[in-house]
Length: 199
Image 1 (cartoon, rainbow, N blue to C red):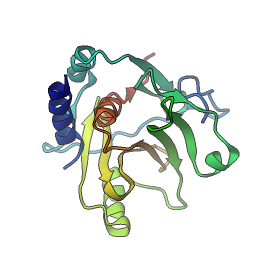
Image 2 (cartoon, rainbow, N blue to C red):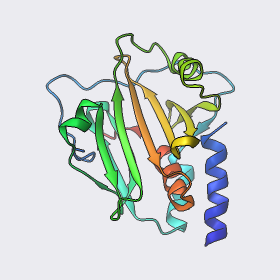
Image 3 (spheres, rainbow, N blue to C red):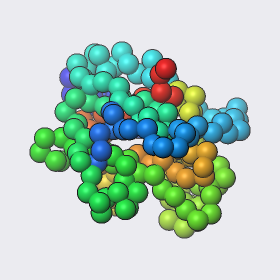
Image 4 (cartoon, one colour):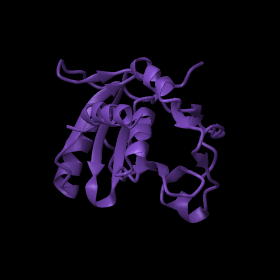
């Protein structure tokens, strides 16, 4: 089993790198936003949940799909991760959902980052992260037909997946600690399960 996990981790690393209840987030008074369609290039990698789902089953991982309704997204989350009630301070920081395991050693944080100047594309966002934050190794890819930017922050021991929202904000998913190999596998599954919400 350890060899299978190590192998799967290697695969996920290659494809991924160069709170209120997430399941039942209530619809806001405004209409849900739509995730934008950005220009596709022949070199943009594409990944699909249906290709990873057999590995989830083979590893015996239990989980389910949860809906981030306002953003029209579904994501697979392991059963051992529970979404927590958010504090006012967390909400003020842009955190829209936060989940941990029972001993709080693993985290999933989802933020909506809103800036005075709208982000025009994920390519602009990628350039800004490189210029302002020094993030050199990031990759833009298609995950279940959604365009996403993925990168690691080694100093914070986390893996990040960003999507651009049509209002020019960034929807950011953060998994930590990424040095936890078993959780890194789960993070790979979660990040590659992001998809438009089913009807």
